[in-house]
Length: 196
Image (tube, rainbow, N blue to C red):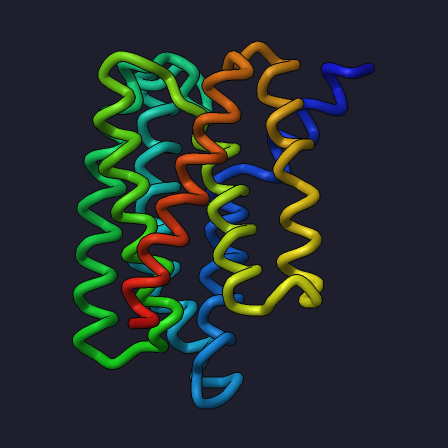
């Protein structure tokens, strides 16, 4: 039963779905209108989440990945490189087009997390699940405060995600907690830079 619950949590709180939610929420945090926010969010999703998802699905279909969440550490390097390219291109383009500053900050944060985690990945399989949920929670608390439902709800998912990844033996407790803490620190550092 515990494994089934952990699997559901891992599937729901996966980097693609969480990334989609954060793109939407960061767009709405500083866009001129709801329509404008939606436009920028769709643009960012088309340049980041969608191509990365399609590459992962293609690699799964051709047998180049072991599973959707890429359990084998050595297989993650290619995904990190593709993610870096997509997010850098998206961040530069959106900044050039005067997208909402919070969306650009979120993408800049994604670049920093991806590059740091890619370097760590050469010797240790740090958890992306916990990193994405903790980084997202941190960004949403910065943008919406502790009273905002999005920040508080996302914060409660951090320990649940950590438990799920350890329960499924996808990561050690150290890999899961380090992923969460490191992502939160990177988010604070990058968002402070954009606020300055």
